[in-house]
Structure formats: C-alpha cells, structure tokens
Picture 1 (cartoon, one colour):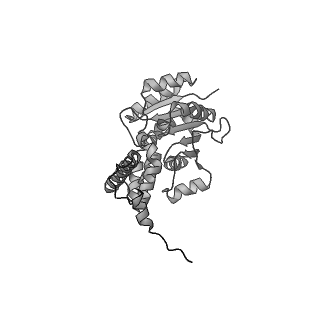
Picture 2 (picture 1 turned 180 degrees about the horizontal axis):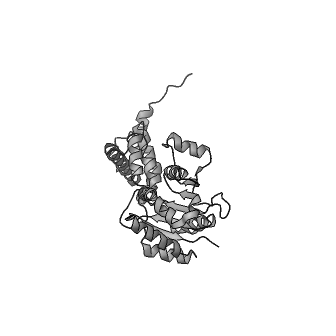
Picture 3 (picture 1 turned 120 degrees about the vertical axis):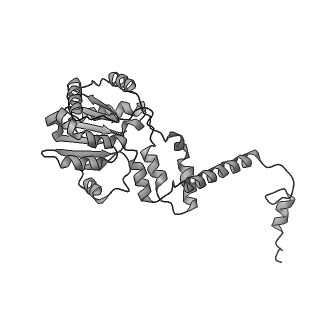
Length: 280
C-alpha cells in the first residue's frame, strides 16, 4: 500500500524549524549576517549611483587622472635628455600608461625604448596593444624579478609604480631595476598629501557591470582591498634613508645637470624626482 505523504510544512512549524511561528529569538550569527549583507547592498547601491560602475570611457579618464608622475615624465623627457645625453638611447620605462611614454621615446632619433606595464591594460588602444604584441611593452608584476639580463638598458625610468609597494616588495623591486640598468635610474614618485586611488583597484571597481548581482559579487570578493585604496606616498627624507639602507647611491652628477636644464626651461616638477646610480 502506498504511504500518504506527510505535511512537511506543519512538521517544520511544529518542531520550531524554518517556518516556525514560535517567538524564539533569532540567532546572533544570523542577525550579524543580515547586517553585513545589508551593508554590502547599501555600499553597492551608493557606489553605483555615484557613477562608480560607469562605462569604460569614464573609467579610463578617472584612472588616467591618477597617473600624475607618468604625465610628469612626458614633461621631463627633454630635460632628462640634456642631463643624461647618450644614456637616453636605450631606455626602459616602468609604470602605468607606459605605452604613451614608450611611443614618445621611439619618435626621438637614435632612441630605442621598452616599457613594463604593472597593471591591467584591458582598455588599451590599438597602438598600445601593438607594442605589447611586438614585445616592446610587457605586462608584468614588478614585485617579481624582471626577465632582463643585467645592464640591459642604459637608463631605467620609473613612475607611479613604487608608491603602491610596501617596503617588503620595494626591497626586491628597486634593486632588480637597478640590476637591469647600466647608467642609472630615475624615480618619479608623488608628494605626501597628494593621495591617489590605487590604479589596479580602480580598474577592478570601475569596469562596466551588467547586473546588480555582479556588483555584489565584486564587492564581496574585493572587500579586503577596500581599506588599501590609497597610495603610500613617502617624503624625500624617507626615500633617501631607504636608498641608503638598500645601498643605492644618488647620482650627484645627474642631479646637477637635471637641475640646470630644469632651471633654463622653467620646469617645476609636480612629483619628487630621484636620480640613482646603477649597481657597479
């Protein structure tokens, strides 16, 4: 004989289950979970309404606004050429928007240039993608050794890249950049107080999102990074002490030549600029 199915809903209610009508207090864990979910939904709603999840054009303009020192490299190139002379013939630029710097250097006579882009380039234009395809520009995590032989380049220029590294990674990255340079390094770094959003995180949160569920998933996955969206901009004193600790010497000759050329052109930098010697 077939058994008659029981009333499961009633059983759940009778036993104080999910559909119970009893007035028992909710679990503290459940309450906390509801609060967290509510907070995440509120953040997602506010961020979306503020234009955080806009189209790629808005994202690109916002991120490019954070490349303060890379823009400074463009302005400083004629002065660097005066200060370094023949050392500007074989240059490696490391930093975001390196394609623009490399493209400008390649237009100079007797200049060969390469670039390392430490961040994602999903929104790169066709000319930048062409440089990547040819191997002139690499997309690489600079926290790890670069695939270049010692003294592969005469001069290495770094901008908007070291500000986001903790001393733990700086201890590996900066000496490695000194390793691949023959005649020195030029470091462009921001002044303290000019806080900028972390480029990699801006690109994560700025891309177009097709659904609210995707917004929520992005927030949950990337929530641990939300408190680290600011660059760690250090003072000149901090950098000089760091250079001494890592056995990196300032290039006094290059500093004097650069200052003289800057004075003649009335160049006032918006970033800190350090000139370092390569490892001998």
